[in-house]
Length: 58
Image (cartoon, rainbow, N blue to C red):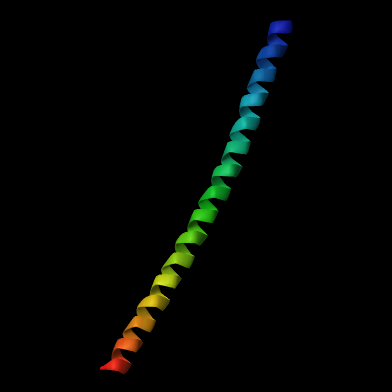
């Protein structure tokens, strides 16, 4: 009976580990997504200001 309890405990720990891993990976993916969105917006603003400056100078 002791071995059965140990196996169930290990199985429960593995399942909880997978749940935690999934939530952590989801959080990291969300942060990367927002970092990419902010980077694209920043690049677009920089390109737009560069185009407007060059148009004003010329």
